[in-house]
Each structure stands twice: as C-alpha cells, then as structure tokens.
Length: 226
Length: 271
Image (cartoon, rainbow over all chains, first blue to last red):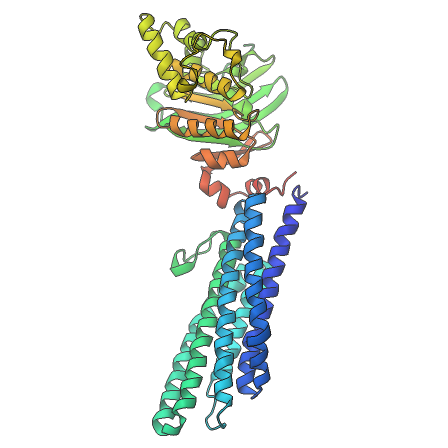
C-alpha cells in the first residue's frame, strides 16, 4: 500500500505535464516541417505565435512543480531521480520548441521563394527526428528504458542523414548557383533537426537515469545494471 | 542479564579477520526476547571514524541491534543473543566480559535526555569518577571543560557549572548527556533517536555536533527521520522485520538503493 498517496499523485501530475509539453513540442516540430514540405505558411505561424509560447509557459510550470516537490516532499531514490529528470527534460523540450521556431522561420523564408529545388532527404530526416522524440516520450510515459536505449541508437542515424543532406545540397549548389539561397535554407533546417534529435537523445538518457539510476551520458556507463 | 551468552563458537584470536578501520563487527547475530526472535542473522561491519545510521520501520530491530553493541539489552527478561559482536578485537558476549568497561568504551545517548539530578559539572564528572580517570581536581575540571566543549555546550554553561542539570533546555540536556558520554573517551557513541524530542534548531545542533565528533569517534545513530540519516551519516543500514536488508554509502542508499525493499521504504511506498 502506498502511504504517500498525495505525494505520488503530485509526481504523476508532474509527469503528465512533462508529457503534455512533449506532445506540444512534437506538434511544433511536425508543423514547422510541414510548413516547408506542404507549403503551408500558416503552420509555421501557428508554431511561432501559439505553440512555442505555451511550451515556454510549461517549462516554467514544470520547474515550479519540481521545486515545490523537492521543498515540500523531499523525494528520495527513484522519485528524486524522476524530479531531477523532469527538470532537465523540461529544459530539453523548451530548447526543442526554440529549434522548431527556427525551422518555422526558415520555412517562412523558403516559402517566399518559388519552389525550385528538391527537398532531398529532409522529410525523411524530419520523420526520424520526430520519431526519436515520440519514442523518448513513450519511454517516459511507460517507464521503458529499453525504448530509451533504442532512441540513443537512432541518433547516429540522424547524424548520418544530416551529413548526406549536406552533401546533396552542396552538390546541388555547385551544379546550379541559383539554388544557393534555397539550399542554405534547407541546410539550416537540417541543422536544427539534428539538434532536435540531440535533445530527444538527452530525454532518453534522462529516462534511463530515472528508471535505472544509471548515468549513460557521454558513455559514462556502457552496460545496464544486471 | 538472564542468558545473553553466545551460542556460536568463538573464533581463536589468530583467525580474526577484522580489518583496520573497523570499530565493530557483527557476525550472524540473532536476538530473541523469550521465544520471539527480533533479529535474524545480522552481519555488519561498523567502520571507524564515521557515522552509520540505522533506518527502518518501527519494530524492525534497529534499536535492539544498536543495544547489542554495548549489551544494553542484557537487563531485559528473556533476552538472548547468538552470533558474535566484536568491539575492536573483543568479542563482547564472551563470558567474563567486563560490561562496565565495555559501556565506557561504547557510550550511549538516548531519545530522552536523562541527566542525573546533579549539577552540570557533576553530570559530566560522573563517568570520570566511577572510572577513576582523573588524578586530581585540576585534571577532572580539564576533562569536564574538554567534554563540554566537544559537545558544543561549554560557552552556554561555563558560568553555571554548579547549577542543576535539569535547569537546562531539552536540547542542552541532550548535549550534556553527549558530554557525559564523551568524558570517558569512548571509542563508539551509540545514539538512539537522539533528536526526536527536540525542536529543529536543537536538532540541527545535535546533527552538527555528530558531524564534528565523527572525526574522533565512531557514531552509530538510530533515527526515524530519513532526512536526518541522509544529512548526517556516511553509511546507512536499512532494516526490515529483524533483517538487515541493505547497507551502503548514504548517498547511494538515498539516491539509488540496491534493494527494492529499501526503495519502497524510503519513497513511502511501504506501509
């Protein structure tokens, strides 16, 4: 029987708010990309004007909830690790929101020009980065360190895709100098996507720390505890 | 004592494996009150010069175990111990153990301060007197001052050493009891819920004092206050239903305990 029902409820609420924030970030990344791929500038505007401000607001709320829990409930062990992880995840999600805004602004600039170059593998890379984010949030929701470890492995894939896109775009620019401005815009988006994937990796690392108490950052602990 | 003799075979001196830096070691300790067994096969090393905290729910055996270390359970009817408790090199349940001398080496501070109805100075001097630790009055006074300083009480009482101890506040009385225990230069100080009857400021003083004293003494503290264990101790042992579940570095126990029972207890998922 749980003897600290109220405390555990507050921990659950904190997790729900982090997950809600994660859902908003997912939407922001998705919309900012579709603004480019589907040529829908209103999606970019939605990210900048509405979603990102709410993400910022949630970061503050999560910080407050976490600090109150620490001050008033003195969480320990797995609960302490969760609160510490929630603080960091909130920070990662807020940064992802900023990156989605970068993409949305880049999309607005791209859309002001005529469609004149292929999107190369950008939609695929976006799909991978967003999947990493979703998986890291699923790992958080289901307390699933295996899923989180799978996210860590995907990061290399996204990095490789960014490199490929860079090469494709450089080639395009070399062949047709009129594509330079647009290609630079796409490079900028690829760079932001890659950073979004990095933050998804951070979230996955935090989930592993929360559930297993193992710090896997910077290959600190290679093997899970047996 | 009714029958607190060990049934486990005594080891010869030459086979002792006590490491340097171990103040006490308990091997296979079982403890019974009559037919009721309250400790089960406890094995524990108490490192010297540090604070070890015992935590666990009421009735888990932590106070009983603490009291085995200076044979304070001896007077309880039907009390019986099997296994081995060593303080330093000495098996303290061996027949012929000088219990008075043992309690000089292993001092104790209780939940409720229990000063004698004497003056402040005479309280501290009590152990010096019965153990004949002072040659003359000057040496006695020097030990009183040193002990009161060690207990962080000197500045508050130096001008009223001959006033009744019972005129002190609760927190001061508890520090007086610590001074009294320190006067006989023990190796180990056992503290059984030493701050549970004190307000937060007096509690903080006792905790700070324990941290200062661990440079010179080995301290074992029983506490129901998990935060207190976390704040003061270097190592923590968690007990459940008479069994030692886990011992480890305090920062490990409170951030990432190895055993689920420990985690359930300290996170309040147990009750």
